[in-house]
Length: 110
Image (cartoon, rainbow, N blue to C red; front, side, top):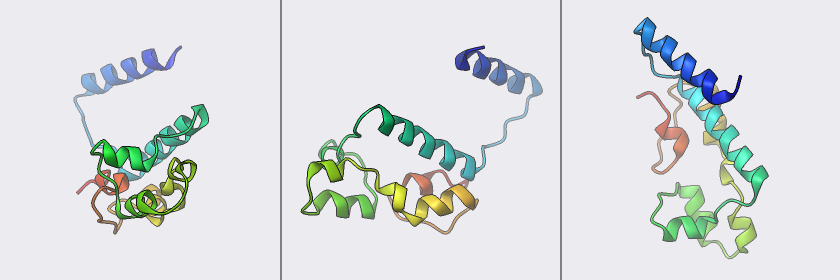
């Protein structure tokens, strides 16, 4: 069974049960991390400088990397890999993280 069919059937089952509960923030965070890692395996990420120029919101740490005097290959790395917000987001629901632009903050069920 392919993934699309599996998730369609899972969605239909949830609709039949009539129950909809938000996914835990820890699950959302782990899924996000896995998707970004898979994207990195397929090629370099868009640089933080390019993201900023496109008007995308960056967290404070991404902003620092974007303006740092380092090469573009460094700016194409994912700073979330070494960020404590990712670790908290993946392990603690309602984690004590709050800065703007951080996807792990956005996943918190607040």
